[in-house]
Length: 283
Image 1 (tube, helix red, strand yellow):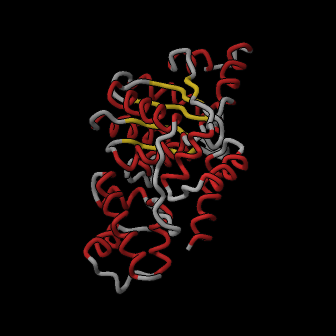
Image 2: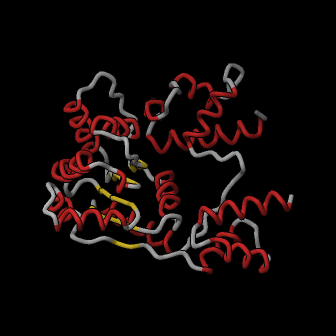
């Protein structure tokens, strides 16, 4: 790995430590990275740091070896950022839905990087209650080794109560099992008015919750009530949004932008790949 990329990773790690609040919390939130390793990197003592460790840190702190990606403030990005600000400052509980590839996760990642006490979890189908809580505690930089499920829940609540305007974002929340979703109720009950909570997903989450309401499924009425009985939908990506992403990242020719728009299928992940390809071709 070249020195220039190591400098970029070290800079990103410094920002990551600042966002987490300390080097120890940053180390607790990263898999396979010790506090001593972080101290060495930030002090410029890189001789004993392996390339594998550099790549481990890069992958978990958001560094992209392809280079800097400039964020374009699409309509969905602006709305998502507004909702994040509102939920954090006023300790709101919100459910936000949007099409896959509309940019909601990009907005969440950027907001999380730039704000303290914001905890972003990208959920998975295999999570049970223990895995969910361990992921949240890890994201918060809290050591949970040896803790029971009850202890972990207490640690989550206690640590969030100590924070100034904390916020927990459950991205791809439609993947969570009912047993894990019930923890959302418990967190809300103990942190109402103190912690912002956002469930973010595709519109499948809304369909699932409303189907559960119709069938009187356990817990769904409570979840729906705590979400304010409302799902906030983000805008679908349009031509202007795609063009803004292209221009922000150096692709300015109308012919190329039109081709990317035509091929995008309103999916910003597809747009990003096309822009990276164009940047590589232009070098």
